[in-house]
Length: 128
View (cartoon, rainbow, N blue to C red):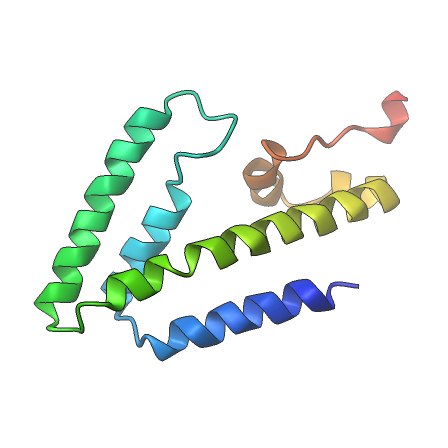
């Protein structure tokens, strides 16, 4: 099942909720996470790193503007390993599902396939 994945996602959500992020902080943190330069298929990781750095600076500025505690950013960043673990767990579950139900996996929504296609290959079982 997916109990471990679901539990990890809810635990992450619970800990992030405790940080009481503003909409702006959450948006900037989300952007920083999405712009991860360590993806193996990325061609220009240095450019992505520079952009991510700018987003982290904007996030730090936003946190300071709200007079939040200084350790808020470090608490947010400390969640990144858990997020990476959740991502890998999700990819494992997705790969297992794709192998078990290839016809269904071929019909995943286009955005979902686009986001995860760089990590997984969706082969058409009719081509085999």
